[in-house]
Length: 145
Length: 96
Image 1 (tube, rainbow over the protein chains, first blue to last red):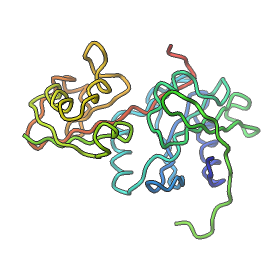
Image 2 (cartoon, each protein chain N blue to C red):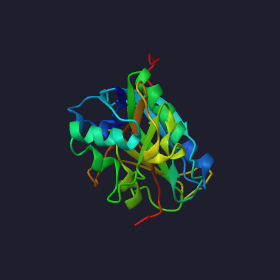
Image 3 (spheres, chains in turn purple, yellow):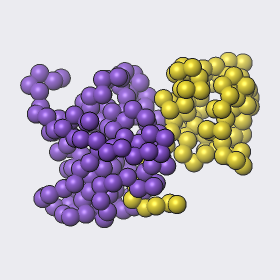
């Protein structure tokens, strides 16, 4: 199960809408071992494509260096599908390489850049196996940093 | 020559869970050969059957992407640091 704050869900959806029709991508980092997504980090899709996303290689290095310095790991790795459902493609599976991450997909195919209903689902992808999981959205805790 | 190599989570099963390991060599190719003698299986995760760098893996020498430094021929020297990171990529297109 992925337990995630409502404002972080809103941030992922807003990013997906802003970049529609290209795929949007990013990470929500959290303390190592906590399984708690905390720090929202939208990334540039270096492919700038409606059917592919890729972190720029130097952005990727900076991201991991930064997480390392903060004792964080990528708890959520998200991206959008802009014309298909929020389900991992074969490409998504072949690239998935963070066994501890929740892979979140947002589909903007219904509404594009506009407000309205969206589809957001979460998966574990380990050794090529996709396992969908429940997403539990929780309120923003009053005392978070 | 001691070169520090940072290992990503997904490859730590090959290094006994170590985040960083040491290796030696004067090129990236030599370092990968040396790593393979210490951590068998690692090489296959970095190189494909033709012996070229896998597309899904990024390798940096002193924070520079080796794709812009001659790939496997990228020079390294004592005190160099190497970082290995899996690409973060995907998308709705089925690449097959």
